[in-house]
Amino acid sequence: MNKIKLLFSVLFLSVIFVSCKKDEATNSVIFASSKVELAVGKSDSVKVTVGLTPFTLLAADNTIATAKVSSKLNNYIVVTGVKEGTTLITVTDKDKKTGKLSVTVKKVALVFTPIKAELAVGKTGTVKIAGGSTPYTILVGDNTIATATVDKETITVTGVKAGTTLITVTDKDKVTAKFDVVIK
Image (tube, rainbow, N blue to C red; front, side):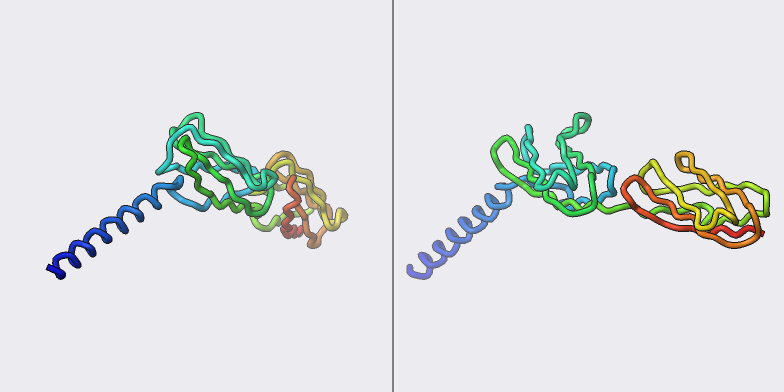
């Protein structure tokens, strides 16, 4: 008889333990991914997999990232990177359950195509900029070797005399990169 009581007690406690674990898991808002990485000025969407609309959102630091409920996709949160850094977005659902999204915002490196400008004296060529945020500014290391102008994502380089110089490009978020210019 004691063995049967012991068996029922263990079985009863197991059911209670499993029930509590299930309740704990559903006491929070859950996302398809709890981490978001994005570039300054870019947005990404994260699906809320457990939670009831409407959602309220609170960014720990909205100078790093902002968040809003998607107007187009049901149960999605749209996060936008403002400046480099990390922050948390707290999402609260209709039943006052909460979840936290970890957000990392990174500056995007500038990439040039081609990676080096090679021209003859008196000739003009272009270099395309990818990454970063417009507007871009440029600084030619030695204007006696080459001159350059920038229009949106295109740098136009003109060879002045034979030699090598650098062009430094800076985007609106102060991300900088350089590329070589060789005039033959």
